[in-house]
Image 1: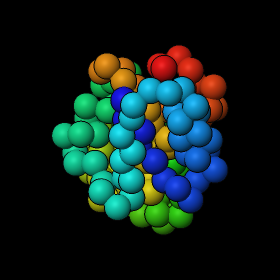
Image 2: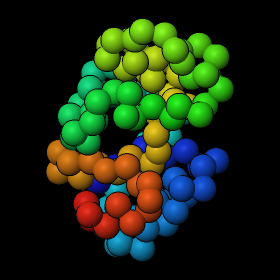
Image 3: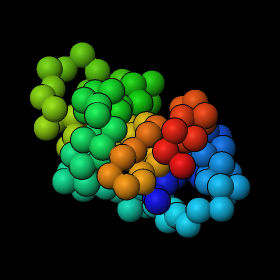
Image 4: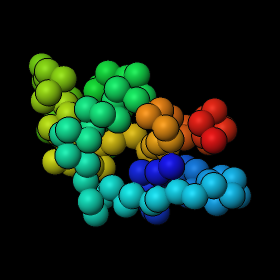
Length: 112
């Protein structure tokens, strides 16, 4: 199991706490320090069964200033998230080729 985690995010810390209490082994991916590649994002989106725009944090200033209102392809959006990992919704928990976004945190129980 794996959690894409941002320690500065309250929801991400809640997700981490749920995983710690689950007793299962998991890996922490500090995705701001080690951003997912375009390929990894495509794999995550497939596991999440989401379109790229659904994974974007649209209230981030980077999105508002650089991307909002522009006509972007899925590839453009995935590239933007890879280059600007703050745009990625969090936390993402992955287990056995399935993934959930831990918002609300209760979503995590669906996968553990």
